[in-house]
Image (cartoon, rainbow, N blue to C red; front, side, top):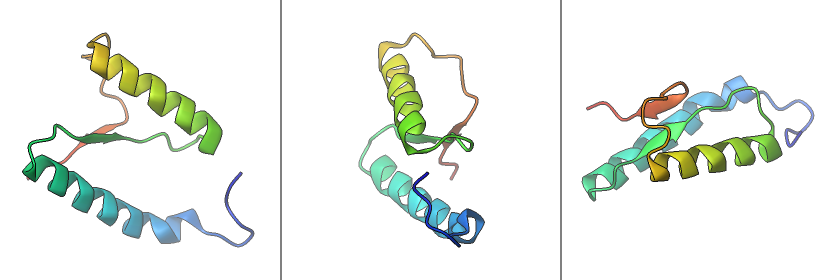
Length: 75
């Protein structure tokens, strides 16, 4: 994986989620329909494939009712 020895993902999770929340707020304020998808058990390569596939399904409208792992900004 991409984690370095001694790296604790839980330690960094709060900061990452805060940055995601800030980014979603900025995008929504600019009129962008933004969400983020969580793939907690995937490494970098598999996560890219899963998120890219999910993005394509969302854009196409093929996966409109599937929301597992989807986090929208709640005001």
